[in-house]
Picture (cartoon, rainbow, N blue to C red):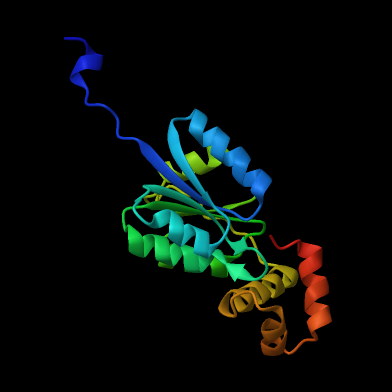
Length: 186
C-alpha cells in the first residue's frame, strides 16, 4: 500500500467570512477556495446567523467593524457559542489593545491588523495556541497612542456609537469624528 492509500481523506475545511467590504470578501473567498476551503460569506451579523443555520464551519474571519457602527465582537461571541472549537481570526483596519483583548476573551484565536492576506490569516489559524517565544520589547507608549487606545476602548464599549463615545470621553462629537477620520477606522 502506498502512503496515499494509508492516510485517511482530509476533512473539508469550511470557512465563514464576515466582512462588509464586498470586494475584499470576494478576494479572500477566491483565495481560500484555491487552497481547498469551502467558503461562505456574510456581510452582517444577521447574514452570519443565517449562514450558521445547518452549518458548522471550523474557521471564521471576522471584520471588527461591520457596516455603520456594528461591532464584529458580537459576531465573535456568537460564533464561539455556536462552535467552541472554531478558529476565529479578527481583522481590523487599526489595532487596539482593548479590542484585541476583548476579541480573545470572546473566543477569537488571533487578531490581525489590515491589510492582511490569505497567508497571514491561514498562518494565524495555525498559531491558535499561545507561544512563550514571543519577544518582549521595551517600547514606550506615546500619549497619542494612549489617547487612541482609550478612544477605541470606549468605541468598543458603546458598540461603535460615536455620539455615546464622545459623551463618555467628554469631547465634542465633531472632534471625535475628526480624530476617527484621521485614523481611518474600518
